[in-house]
Image (cartoon, rainbow, N blue to C red; front, side, top):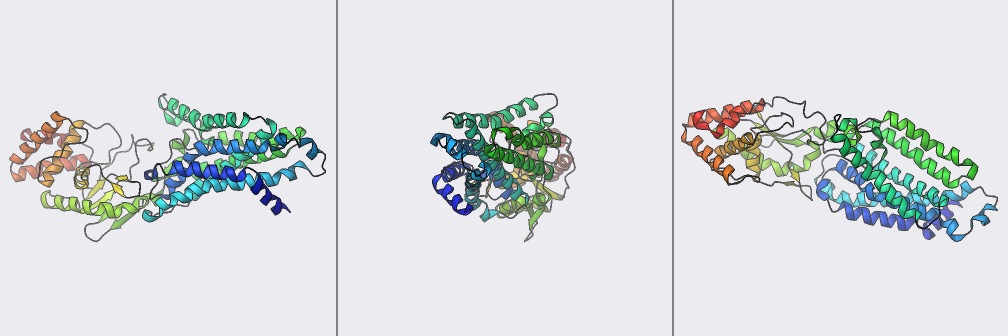
Length: 460
């Protein structure tokens, strides 16, 4: 009997149209930025959570529209005279909306998987957890919408609640994050309430995951909110306070258990993502496991750079490894991190990832690799323009041709680089090698003074 009623709900209610709208909107938005997740399962799961900024209000509005069905049909008094408890009568409608909300959330992710599978080499289990919490949040949104539609069966209720949900889930956290970032305490002092929204503001980077603690608290909180929504939808008037209790208690507990700092604080480095995957058919070239699909794209330019350095530079590196450093907006400890990069290793930055999951280079990749050889793991502190320009000169010397203009350079900067290159090549071969080798070793120790001195090699 229950299965038959559920099938009727799926055929005649707005549950299926809600799923179609969620799937269409989610897929359209997701496919506009495939470079954000191509080749990476965790980033696809994160992209799904970002999509909740649009999907959560739509699901809430769909629940409101479905919840006002009895009032719209004017059958409330008729159903009140039946002996069957209301909570039993509303279960099929709630189940139909929940199934369709989860399906509407899963379909865009399945479409996005077509951009992940061909170049992915790492599937973290946490990606399933992150996606499951997103699906659970839509169930909570739908059931809250059912309760709101029953309580306020007005035509304007759905759009008003959708706008309010968008503001509360996206605009307000973004405003609070921006406000915290300019305060004395920084983002670490952003309120823990930011993690109550399933929409990821400042999502984790490629080598990160969400901590188990945050996932667990969010899942329990959303389950409590969903339970309260269902109870409110099925409760009689005298039971409304008791029906709201799970959400109230869970919210109070979550605010205590969740860390401050928002999603930036909820992220942690994933050891599996930063593990090395190497091509050893020649000089070893390694990338992080989360970027395993990039290995065929970076191997050739990295080996070419290693060969050029071996031909001209004493003590040249014997292997190339992708850096595990996180971008400045994701790394909480970048300012405090500083280390010595091994002289035998060329550590290069993660290349840009294109819409199909392959590496994209704004400049010649060999030159980019050679410049990376003159940079150490020195945190995200400010870097002088002279040091950046000197790397261009050093890379040009290794290639044996004048420096290529930088993307941000002007005519004066280009002239400075050309003059430095000509002065360097006028020195004796031994002096050239000595200056460039000293500049590299000092840069690996985070001392860029000898590197900047390459702009004036005649006085070094």
